[in-house]
Length: 135
Image 1: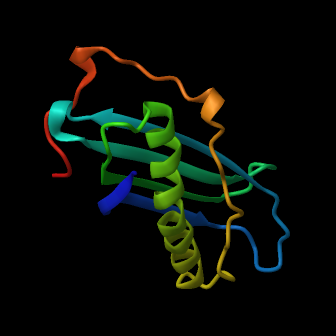
Image 2 (image 1 turned 180 degrees about the horizontal axis):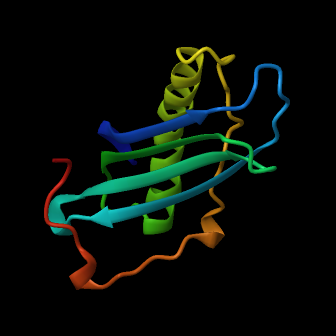
């Protein structure tokens, strides 16, 4: 079972230079990687999430965050990847909503995003292990 222990936001970048009343179409991009800490049964999820205007108007928000998780011996890495993302995503949604709402824009609520386990690529090389959790 994957369990979120803690998370932190490394950076938030928000730009809103579109005139009031402008209708914008939003597009999202994100990357999510998980690094494992050897026999510790802990891993670090790193999320980089961006929302931009499809028509390249000056509206964007980017959140970079990371989270520390623990997992069990019998958890598959693909499951750890997807379950850790599912646990971290609601915090990302709230951060985006709060940031936009406090900036004079109607609070942006992004739709749920799910990672398809079959698309997860797992590297199982010992040299790819991280040496420390959140700084």
